[in-house]
Length: 371
Image (cartoon, rainbow, N blue to C red; front, side):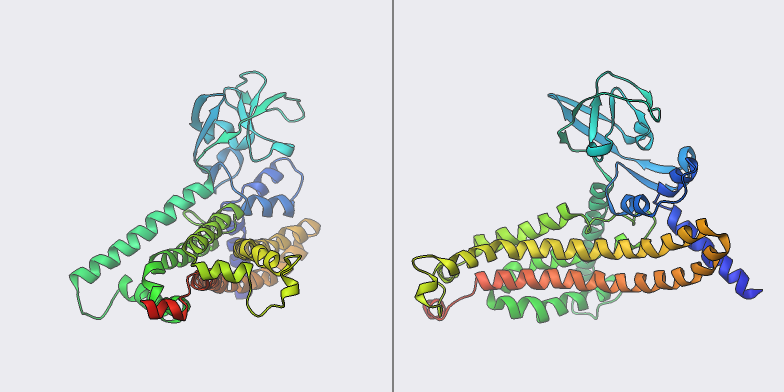
């Protein structure tokens, strides 16, 4: 009897986790199409124009976010709630479908109202300049506010309690900062560490915080920010610019005239310089893809285990109940693993950024003697 109660309780927890922040299952039920694992997973890992909290269909609770468009020279602003999760149009604007999914489209007329299933609608054009506050953008603002609050609070503690043992939030953050400085930043950058420490610490805590928020299934968590390739691409691009703008002359000499390489690999066909130049661009590319792929893959695997409950439940309720404990155990295991990956990926991204910057700004012996 106790086992049955525990079984029902755990199954209920998984059902709540699935429904919170993921309206796909609800819409599939409404249309009596059954559970579809693919759309369920994709809806979770991709961006959206509203932040779904809980509920089903018209009874769902969603935080509407502002849609901001510059359409044919005219600024257009309205709430995403007007579009009713893509099921309605507002003043001719609607969420795209098919090849235009994820975009906001302008219909041929200024139609406002529900979009009827099976009816054809003519799209006049796709709104190219779309600066809407999406779920990921909102999550970005939340994480920036949290980071600012954390470090401003820690800074105040240092001022109020100088030369005293850290406690509270200060005691949580300080060991991490000391570890990064002693094990990552200082070994990679040497006497140039102080200049780049603010950027590298910001990079680490930004990635770590958003990785951890992405694991939490309820607001303000649940957004897959570091699993968005645009976000990881910008982070990698910043490292790329800092590395190459700060690079010393010797760094470029080593790229175009690599020492220790036979001359016939440089002339008449510059094989090695070409390889080295390609390496300049592959390094940030690897940074971008590694973070994006690891975080997104973790979310997909977790949702895959949860989906097994509904997939087998459609075949037979009994099989669904039998599979649910196994899915829950794997879900918990993957949740712990994702927490570990959140730290590892933040650490690896920061470590590689420090190494790339350190290699580009490395001081040669003659520079040290002149100094």
